Image (cartoon, rainbow, N blue to C red):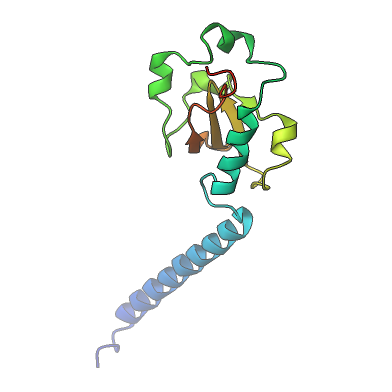
Length: 147
C-alpha cells in the first residue's frame, strides 16, 4: 500500500493543507479585489468622453503657474517616464493636482485608494497606495486653448 508509511502520509497531508490554504487565499483575494473595485483599472469610454469634453470648454482659471510657463508641458525627462502600468516617479508625485470638483462629480465613483489627477496636460488614473499609473489620457488639458 502506498500510504502505509506515516511520514509519507504526513507529507501528503501537509502538502494538501498548504495547497488548500493557498487556494483559499487566492479566492478571497479575487473576490475582495473585485468587490472593492467595481471599476476596471483604466478609464472607461464614458469617462474619457466626459473628461475630454470638459477640457474642450474655455478654462475658468487656466493652468497652474509652473505649467503655464511651459504651456502645460512637462520636462522631457519626466514626460518619458509616464506610461500606463508604470510607477509615478517621486519627482512628479508632488506635482499632481486634483481634477476640478465640477468634473469629478460627473464621473463614476472610484475605489478609495485610486484617484484621477492632472499632471501637465495629462489626466491620470492612479493607485494612491503604490503610485502606480493605471491609465493616462494624454494631452487633454488645454484643448480649449489649443495648447
